[in-house]
Length: 220
Image 1: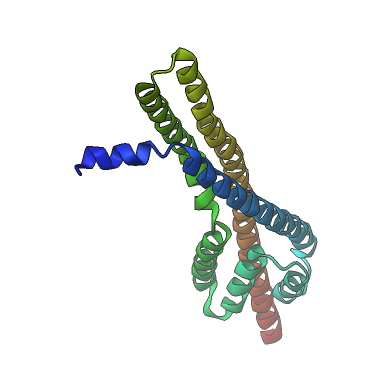
Image 2: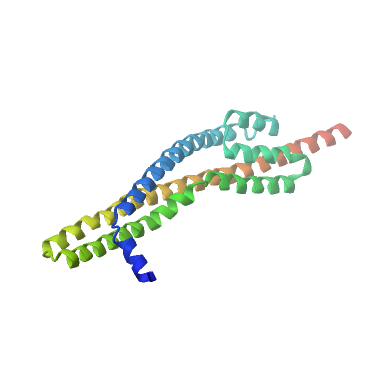
């Protein structure tokens, strides 16, 4: 049996298995969308509340100690990044900046887990559906050649096989939409993280200036 015959046997199986695959992918896609939607909503709300709280305590005399207290009230990847920077404050501002950049990279990677699945599905599910349609058309013409039935049978077979293409689009469109929505939410959280990192460095310099002032005042 040559390769062409093997492929023909696969094609004659029709598009039913493609439809089954698309249904499974659709269920997985919905599960990821629900999970990520809940997680990103909660983290987004915590990040916004953290931003508001940080703005209120930014110029208080307690400085970084007050910031550390606020961070514990709003758990999020952003809070984790800022907390890591504060823990490195004894090494100086450059070390703080490096640590926060490293932690931000890890935080982004963790937030993007399983998003590649949605992106890949959004880009490729239509092609999977089209593949199913092609298999269905091949089977329709083969059935026509064997049975010798008229055009109506071929048209009915082609119409049935087009369901695979429609199913591919049904899977791809929500996946692509939510992939872009979630990427935007991650981007927004990272913007807040960058802004808060700069704020913490400003508070660090403010604290340092206050310490230097107290030292100079003590010498007088």
